[in-house]
Image 1 (cartoon, rainbow, N blue to C red):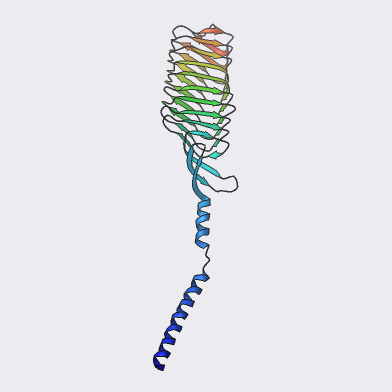
Image 2 (cartoon, rainbow, N blue to C red; image 1 turned 30 degrees about the vertical axis):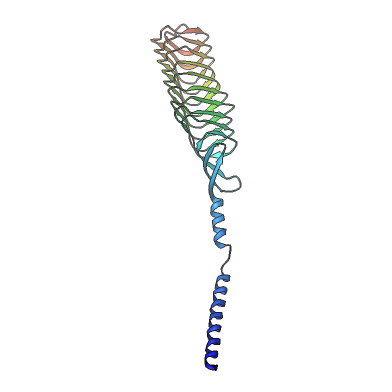
Length: 265
């Protein structure tokens, strides 16, 4: 019996020693090391939904940034990479800074109020494009087909191209550093624009009005239907009008040279 008791005591002691070593080994690791890594990872890249835009938030300093994949709602004064407006959605950029481009899908609408866009605004078969309240766009504004377009009190450092727009185009009290081109649109009203490049109005179907534009290059009006009115425009180079039905009307336009239908305007 003594031999068996001694063996039993040695077996119990070995089990206790093994348990003690296991507990010591587990205690030597930081209980928060994995959670801390997970928390750090979650802090650097996580899911975010801000004003209808869904993307990821990147913790790069106190300010951070939000990558907006899709916008259907309002984005406030935050910084985003690119903005995509899905079909039928309406996105408002209220003081938003966009580091990339804004793309508007079919029947979508974009309203930019006091926004800063480092790329371009592109809308094809959209419902509405509004750029207002001192919005600054580094790239181009390109609108194709259907959309009602309004540009007011803003700056476009690239080109403004309106093509095959089924609704009206209104641009006023703004600056365009590139060219302004409106073709095959239904109607256009341009007033008090400072354009460093050329202005071209061609093959439009409805009434056109150009009032008090300052153009650094040429202004060409051709093949428009529905009437064109030109009042008080100042063109650095040539004002040329041809093949418009009816012929353009207006007065007070100043240009280095006036040609054809605009010779007396």
